[in-house]
Every structure is written in structure tokens, then in C-alpha cells.
Length: 402
Image (cartoon, rainbow, N blue to C red; front, side):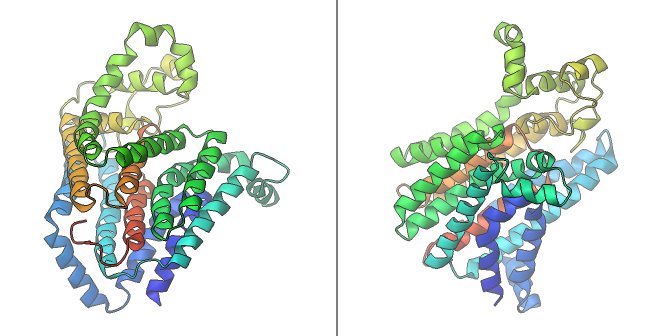
């Protein structure tokens, strides 16, 4: 019974995430409860042992979680850092245990995979209807309930768009696994049309990054994963420095107004934060403290903003500012470990290979210019994606590697 409920919840993810991306965190904890509900003590002990035996996963989590916790020692606001770290650590802990528990799970049936695709189609149609105010269901419901439709679209739905740009790839694989290639390709095209009609730069970046990765891995299944193994960690580490350098170039300064419009003001936010955060190069200013930087009022008016942004809207720069160069190295190392694990688990021409790489790069692309890397729902989404992949892979797949 618990397995069936788990399947139903995973099938509903595309629709849930569009209507409430924040629901990813409680959804993950619900999936964790379902995983351990039968024979609770036995299940927990067994999956603790599995987690303890997975050295690469533990090392990856240590790279991502230990340094942010230590940053409370020199943080601009130690309590803020500790309060931010705890929920992220809990999400990762329960996510990892639930993922280990899913090793025993029954894969989604062809009918369930079609249901998952149907939920994505419904989500896409709901979003397309919003382009026509008189028939948009989300807008009509918000209007009749007294809510602010535009605010809901900007805050809730925009997050969901980025998630859909990532979710498309496990769904694509699931459909191809059951031989429904046309529907798989049609869904990729449909989602692309939806995302290009919406004002979500992050979702569009994630979609394009995922699509390009998928095509390149498909065309170069042996060499391109090795290229990603080198390029992605290197890019993550160097991007904050490259960003600072590019912002000072004559071309950028000459075309500042156009770049400001194109980036929704980000090119003005970034140099202000870099300047305000100077002096914390190696250690950073502490997890989730970049919003405490003091930015001159004149700069805020130019952006325009009333106060320092809650986060830099640049995932690599946020790591650089809050966790320093050491933090950048650790996160880059975690990415290298992840890609190395994927290379071992999904060798060349493995049916899932291109789609799994597309999932990872789409996640990094969507998160590059928008969400705070510490948002709980965004962290929870990683584990839900892993669970979805586990339940989409056929029986007999060597799950011990991944």
C-alpha cells in the first residue's frame, strides 16, 4: 500500500511543483515516512547501514554540508547561518535515507509512466492557458479566491517552471523505456514552447542547458561525459571570478543598460555584492549572509531595489561570497564526485545515459541565475529527482553503483 502511495505522489510531482514548488520539502518528508512506515526500526537500521557503506555519497554530502556549518564560526550572523544550515542538512539526511530505501522499490509500471506524462501535459496546458487571461484557470481561481494572480505566477509558478525544465528528462527517459518515443519527443517540444512563452530566464536556461547536454551526450556518448567531468567543476569554480572580470570590461560598461534589461538587473546586483563582500575571500562571510551586505543607497536606486537582495541570483557567486574560495573548491569537488559516479553508473550508450546527464546540467543551469542554493524546496527537488529516477529505471539495473 505504501509503495502504491509513493508511486502516486511521484506521478503527481509535475502538477504539484507548478502549483506549489515549496511543497517539494513536505513531499520529500512524506516520501521518507512512507519508505520507513513498514517495519520502521528494521528499515531505518538497514538504510543507515546502506548510507554508511556508501562512501562516495557520504564524501559528497560532507563536501556540501560540513563547511557551511563551520562557517558559523566566522559568519557575519552566526545564528542566521545555523538556522539556515539545519533545515538543509535535515533535507539532505532524510533525502539520502529515502533514496537508499528506494533500492527495494518496485519500478513504475508503463501505465504509471503514462500517468506521469499526463500530469506534465496538464501542467503545460494550464500554463499555456494563462497566456489568455479570460480562460486561464490559475488566474480565474486566484481572482475568485481574492488572491493576487500576478503575484502567484511570479512567486509560485516561476519556481515550478524551473523544476519542469529538469523533470522533463526523467519523464522523457520513462516514456522511451516503454517504447513511446513520439510522446517523449513531443513533450520536450511542448515544454519548450511553454517555457519560451513565459518570463522565466532560469527555466529557459535550464531547458536549453539540458537539451544541449542531451543531444551532445547522445552524439558523443564516450567523450562528452568526460568533457563534462572536467568542464562543469572547473566552470563552477571559475565563474565567480570570470563574472567579476566581465563586469569590468569596456563592452559591459558601454552596453550596461541593455545588459541590465536582459538580465533583469542582475549585472548591477553582482558588482555591488562583490564589492560589499570583499575582505572575506578565503572563508566567505558565512552561509546565507550575502543579504546582510551593505550596498550604497545610490546603487540600490539604480538596480532598482529598496534593500540588498535576499541572494545574489548567481549560484556560483553565492558560494564564493558566503563560503569563500575554500567553499567553491569543495562544491566543485562535490560536482566532480557526482559526475564521476554518473560515469560509472551510466556507461556509454546506456539507454538512460543522455537523459541523466541532461537532468544534472538542467538543474545547474536553472539554478545558475535565480534561486538561492539554500532554498529548502530547491534542495529537496534533488532528492525527489533521484527517487523518480530510481523508480523509472527497470528491474535488474545495477543500482549499487548509483
